[in-house]
Length: 279
Ligand code: NAD
Image (cartoon, rainbow, N blue to C red):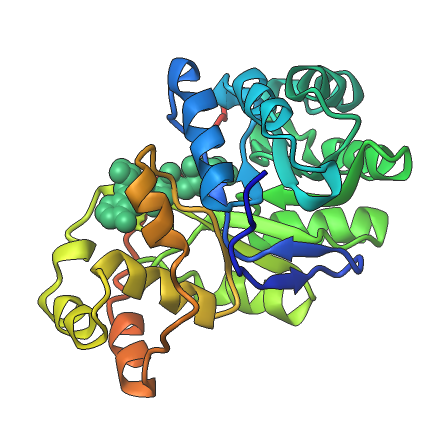
């Protein structure tokens, strides 16, 4: 068995611990996923972020089973897809079957899909699944302040996390302040802006990277870590898995951190959560 990387954990509002860095497997082809997750576990990752809609839970499960790593050393997140919001128990049971697990560590309502008007029901059901022991923690993804406010008012329960598009170009000040102020941990999806922008070739970031003997990707990921955000950059390449987790042997100066923060220009690359999935 392999050794875990020295990655710190963050305590969630339910008292559980989540490794701050993991591997995301969105758009990792099912045919490649077992190899990718096996390599990540070999490299020392212990946190995998998948979703029912990614179509690769079974391959994530196969890699976990073959790794021989004890279940309590792994952190696995999956997500409830939009067409199962009133059917969460069966949906999670299907995910668990594919993953080969008795429970996940974190189960998320993937998108609110406001026009369906079932995200409160979805949240209530995810809370029931936590009570039933099928997930340790209950959270949401892509929820705006109005969605969070509604599910909290309906249940009195705060999600452990909100997983949102978050990167230097799209920092979501109001939403992140709401989450931080209410003890909801932030998970960044697209922490590297999904490779869709010129973020990784920004001259000022190249300078900072050179000063530390690191890559620009590491500078951006370190910025997330210093903000207290949970990240799981996606890569299929082993050398990048190593690179993306080697974030704890350097620090950005205050000025360097501020230079990354100054890249904000309100640019999102993913869908708008108020619109996505609406019919
Ligand atoms: P990302 O920001 O992690 O970017 C991935 C891209 O960056 C890939 O093209 C990869 O080749 C490139 N990359 C990775 N490491 C690099 C490095 N060291 N140097 C240069 N390029 C590098 O985007 P993502 O995959 O969309 O987000 C990460 C994870 O977040 C996903 O895999 C998934 O688990 C999750 N996610 C969730 C949602 C949601 O709705 N909840 C949406 C998208 C993604």
